[in-house]
Image 1: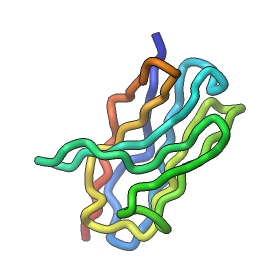
Image 2 (image 1 turned 135 degrees about the vertical axis):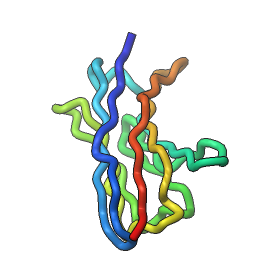
Image 3 (image 1 turned 60 degrees about the vertical axis):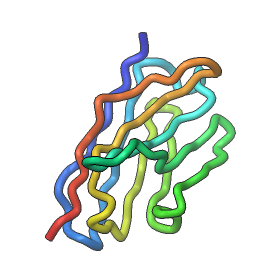
Length: 115
């Protein structure tokens, strides 16, 4: 069983920045991709950003140019740098680590953007 743990959420003012981190209990080299998702109250969970084992990335249109996904293989960690945060970015952010046939999810970290 793979454990995935997110951290770095919190309260930030509009225009501010946060960096989320996600650590897995298994070597990052065993996974084909890692992704960040979010779920706002009353809304469905949506993909925010994805990075493959070959460092190919995709972003939701709503975060392009503001968010950056990256990874540190030595630390088995995936990051989501979030800049120019908006109130509509408020959500619980989840990290998923995927093999070819299964995804492992964390418990989520709350991000609240408010003045």
